Image (cartoon, rainbow over all chains, first blue to last red; front, side):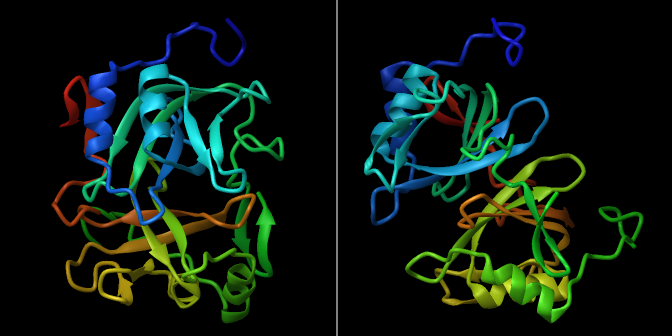
Length: 132
Length: 132
């Protein structure tokens, strides 16, 4: 139990079969990746977008902890393993074409590596992007 | 004035200079594209993800009507020109790395070409994706 998860709600987890069936519906791109949007489940705030390969999709659904594929490090990246800023899965959605995922999550701490709560902390202004 | 936009609120529009300064901050990928998430500004619902090139970013900010780059048609695609299901710009945000956009919009009609309000109408279930 912590301040970000006062109810201590469990992450949503799926069986290996369910996770594979979900991954089978994903239209991965020519690099084998799909963009995944992370949205705080209760406030609706969009926190970040990162990428998943098939293994990351299955690890996220079976483990209940959001796991991406780091394109820069070319490695699996279970969010929060280093920072503690974990993302617990609440619900996983897939779009009409199967080429984008929407993860409804419970964020612990900031989602952004800059320390901002959301990665989208800059907005268009009269002289380019400015902090909100 | 219509049912989806009862207040008849104006779309947000930017000057050409402001739009270019915003586009200068975007880290387009090796195809010259950036993913753009469309989120209903008042409910927080995530409606779709599509792609923009530099011209689409500038057209969106100067025109106030969300305009994507259609990868399948290889053409500019001002959302709603055919369907009437326009997206009026409320706010444009950019993430920490500059490689994803978050568009806060006012959607008229359904966002999805299937007629669903959001493209994310399927959720992970015990036997793969299922309608919500």
